[in-house]
Image (tube, rainbow, N blue to C red):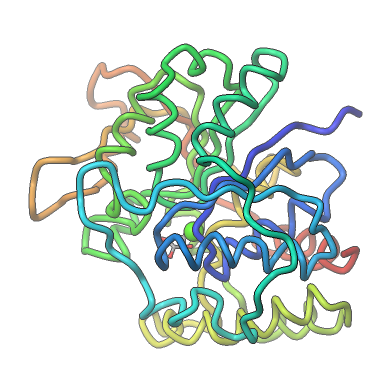
Length: 312
Ligand code: BDR
Ligand code: CA
């Protein structure tokens, strides 16, 4: 089987780290590069954190590019209250051996889409969609070259996590999300409705740690920090592990169910800015523009994650 070519666009973030690790551990996907965007923490940290993760995985061969340092038309909102001041609190920060690649993340995405066969590259978006919207605005010709965008973002039945109606990634750059959802590229969306069903319970984190390798133990340390905020907020054993659902979808889509819907992004209202209005019940005739996941087999998800991270 030829591995599926992916670019990971990300704002690490402990759950982004879990997604990157899952991808790097999985032969079904070929990570062509990682592009960092400002989100959970500012760009200087997300672009360093992405390189820390590749190094922890023993994969410093992976190229990391820095992209947008702020949303298209707004000031940056960050989430240190969830991720800690480094974005990867739980592990000791270090300066990675491999520097950032020269050039902007958007240019790397554009050049890669042009160099690879049309329809062969999937974009995995784990943060605000600023880099991807920048690609679309700068080089509209590459839009048709993308196989698919699989993204973590939005929420409908669960509501929001940064405001009552908006999920963080979409809220930070709603104009960018709007560009992406209007682009016509096939989209698979992992909203809070599905990510809130994969909880980092004590038993699961213990199993991960028991793998005993550097990546698994670092991930367990990060998760122990990361889950504290959400455990208190939601009153659950463990917190949602959002971003790895994107990679799990590529590896084992049968663990998810959902449906194709129309999804529109609220960019005007102050009250509901960044809301993803999902026409789940097809009450409009608006065109279906995304496959929206809603259910996941959480045990199957963690079995996959824990087994794969043990390979690193
Ligand atoms: C999303 O926001 C970030 O805090 C996480 O990394 C995830 O991508 C969840 O709302
Ligand atoms: Ca993220």
